[in-house]
Structure formats: structure tokens, C-alpha cells
Length: 122
Image (cartoon, rainbow, N blue to C red; front, side):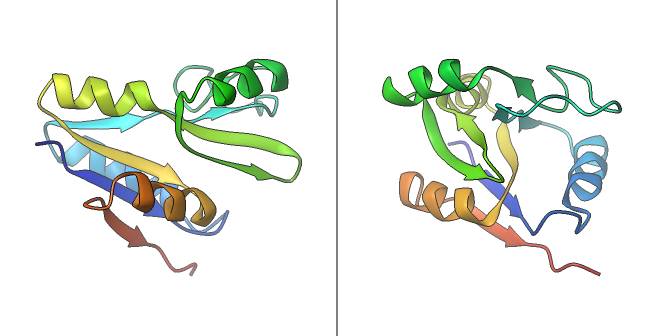
């Protein structure tokens, strides 16, 4: 059974740094790369930091039920594709998600046994 770890926190609290360190030190963890409609920042790598897609593509995927959770933040969509959970389960790995508070609430409804970890900002 795949265990889902939801790491959530307000923007700028260090959750991404925490998740990167966790993935380096704990074997057999898969990371769910979130989808977003916002453009990449200069320091971000598509397919590593986020999967960048158009608003229309996101809305089409949303209509097909492809997301476990999603949120609109500052006019852009962010979401977790179901495939990341299915892939982790298929490969016998636990799954770590780095998502905002809105998404964490939705994911707890979709996967009630998920472990939710809230990071307080420094």
C-alpha cells in the first residue's frame, strides 16, 4: 500500500527545500511533480520543478477528472495528476507531494489515509 505524504505550507516557508532533502535521504520515495498554468521562473526546469501547461489544457484535464486536487492561486492553476499516485502505487513506492493548503484539504478528501504535514514559516 502506498503511503502519501502531503507537505503543505504557505509560499516561501521552505517546504520545497525540505522535500528535496527528504527525497535525497529516504529511499523508495516518489515525488509528484505538480502541474501549473503559470510560466516557468528563470531558475525552474520544466518537468522537474513543475509540468507547465496552458490554462486550456489544464481545464480540459480537470474536466476529464485527471487531478486528485487542484487550486487556483494568484490567477494560475496548480494540481496533482492522478497518474503520479497510480505510478507510485504500481512501483511500490510511497509518494511525497509539495502542495498548498487548499490542495492539501482536497487531497485528504480524495485519499483520507494520507499523512498531512504542515510546515510553519520561519
